[in-house]
Length: 293
Image (cartoon, rainbow, N blue to C red):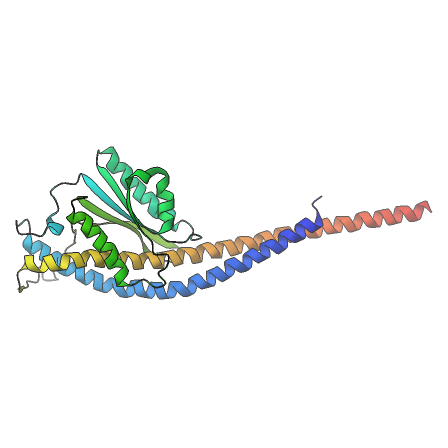
């Protein structure tokens, strides 16, 4: 028979845990609102920027004057994977899903004989990847002290990536993050940022594309805008990740709170049954003693 004192202590412990998970759920919900608003506010700008860049890139085409960030190095032998995860855990499968996508890409590239280099943003991704890919690490960005993500954080990461590209350290760079859809849906995403891979917005309803005259010429504008484009894509990914992290944490803490409640109910039933059994045994002993007299 379970010890009543042990059961009582377990119930108190689970109740304490439920208070913590409930509080974390409420904090995540508050942070999610701000993070979601930031991510959604950035999407129109990023989409419009990508559309302009796609138009510029299409006009330059395969010209010899095309900037290196657009044309690339002409090969894809060395690949840089920028894996962006959170600094903290307790957010369900958020980090694991991003890392899993990055691992799949890394394994595929390595099987093809490519050289893989990994730059991690966020402690949790680094912790998971270092078990198998430590020798591929080339850098890490710690955002643990950052209270509110800003464009400057993306610029710092972009400068690091661009410096490595200018130094000939890699041919292709891809970022890995989670696109926020809802509290229960965060989609692991891989996006190539170098060479720039902008998708055209396409034609209008009449089937004709809009034509623009650029001053200075397209090559000069691209040379200035492409580095900003890398920073913009990274910033957008950071915002999507922030919203996804809080959504995943909110969902995970809600599940943990529900599970704690179920466990408390089960332990309470077990405690009451054990207590009833103890009382019954005591009554039997009293009655038996009375009959013996």
